[in-house]
Image 1 (tube, helix red, strand yellow):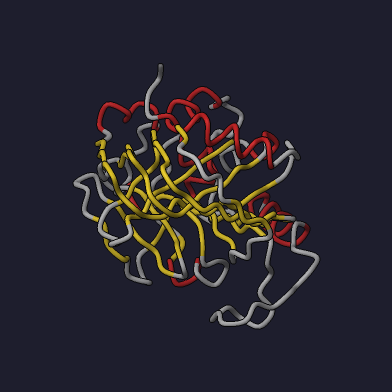
Image 2: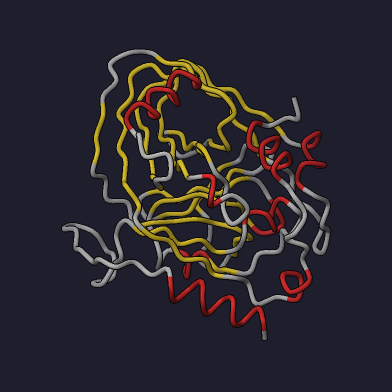
Length: 270
């Protein structure tokens, strides 16, 4: 009963206040642009709830751009131009079936209001500082698409877990697989979210990669950008879909998982 009430409150009171259209897309006629939809709770994924519960077909009704985790943690998930891609721990990357399910994902219908061409090479730290200089609202929500050439990219993906296994994600860091790419082209799909969204989502910068050939990807660990274009969609509201499952009804959200979130995001505890 309490879970259903929370679901109703989160879904109804955080709805987008403005609706606009965009030519040339297959989005529904009343698509809420500048609105973030999240299926699941970030802290629950970090804490070990990996069972998929929300289909990609349903997810794509809420966005054509985003990222997340596949069912049973089997790699990394990216949504780009209305298609969902999975990168497994083997490195295999493919478009997923609409009937497959995600255990956690955030998406939006991407409509950029800022476009940047830095015109210089940048490390990951330099890129984030550059973005910070533009995105001066520290409590703002931003969807960010970065495309172009990269001197170097390092990504990772986790192996799948057995159904019902709930080992916290930080404890599985030794099992993650890393991939490196040199002189490559592709797309980074990601977000910068504020601190008040920690636990429901993941605050700070979070990017996943998809190669231009759409045959490689993963969660970004490090990069050296060469010649890139940056598009930014300023988000104004968000909705959270709380899974109606027994695991969520009994999950301990009081536990502080801040350090676990940070270590998972950077790919290590140091």
